[in-house]
Image (spheres, rainbow, N blue to C red):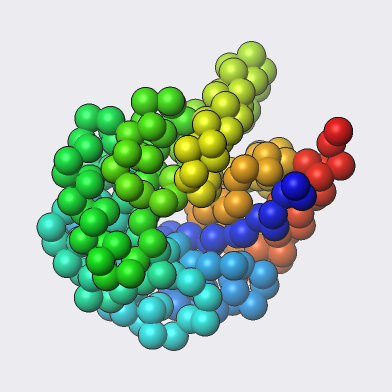
Length: 254
């Protein structure tokens, strides 16, 4: 079977980070989302954190009302966030771990250790016709727990792999990538749709796009950083091209 196309979700959180550093409404995350979509993004991701350090409630409402591509709401599995999601009704909700002191999401959910709490959140979101994804490490126990909980989608945390690649740690990078390969295969056999994200740049996105089981990459911080130098449309188009090259390599592989 031919590998399906691979989707690009652009995370616009750090447009809001820049806006909030000064106050006011500029730069506007909604405008960034619209530009990213025009440049080739298949969807927009935004993380409404409990402390509202970047994206705020009004951003989510405006994104849902104004963009023509799917909105993926990253969120903690808390009562407050579940209620917000059920009210806004984004296309998808990606449940992520969240700690107030962290700079960014540092690891995957412990789906194996939080089955009942996550099962309840997944059920409530599914009742509102929101497609639920669990952001987890590519570990068999976590993947099997995600399937048992009833989430139809997982996003594999690629941070450790990307950090090893960036540090020039070839052996560690190879081991982490092999863990992702095995995890994606296991998840597919379990009937889960597989996404991936965290720390991806042009090179790592191209490499991971080779894996036919992975159908979506969510990328934010790197693209917003590149946009400072080259503009957001150019950064998104370059990422789209890198992912397409990777997918083509995967299709050509024996």
